[in-house]
Length: 320
Ligand SMILES: [Zn+2]
Image (cartoon, protein in one colour):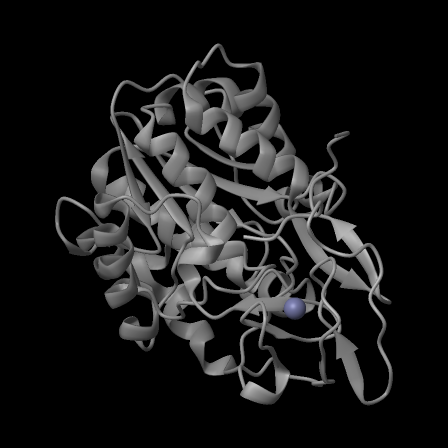
């Protein structure tokens, strides 16, 4: 994995070519445009990375992941079977970052502590579900399948929260954003009926606004689906529900205020914004003495978020 210490601060981009971002490398590749493509003509032969003017992708996803023990590898292979899009190899992949961070918490038995310190809820037991993959069920989490069937027109292609944490008292849906924003709208407007009629018209109980206002005019389609389906599942399981939006600290600072205008929150049902930097501070302030902590801290400090106008961008707002 190349971090900001190994990457050039500035890369030369022309109309036809881009130089390899790795320090000391003189290779140039043909400049690619629009949708990112993994093709040989865009690959640095020395570093085996596919290059675009704004990012790069490893040949092998393992190079972008921090944990690759046998049990990690086994888990990742299983996630691959249920996850709809599996793109872990790109430097700016929010999936790879989510996996690196949450797998660290899970492997080191820090999930309950993280929930208490960062989200503010006391839990005793927790289970992490990555992109719908339930580890005990070894398949798509059954309750999510039921939720999709209740509200979605094509359940097999239904909503997929990045990280679900099911605990003894609360269900958490964590929607992680890195380069993307929360702005999404439905491609097919006919989806509205099932969302608003499903779960005995649960929509009316958990939203103030109608579907068009939230999902289309305010472009909060994805968050609204998670809010609806998560509320429904939590109710079936007799749990509280938190929808947690995990973003960079400099982005979407008022997302709580914006989304809370449309949804009915109460003691048992909340929408919360937390930041990647919150998680970094939680880990760095902890008393952990494990080796993995140093790996995680270095990752947060030195992670890149690609190039903007040829200049390298540091991902997290952390003073090195
Ligand atoms: Zn190179």
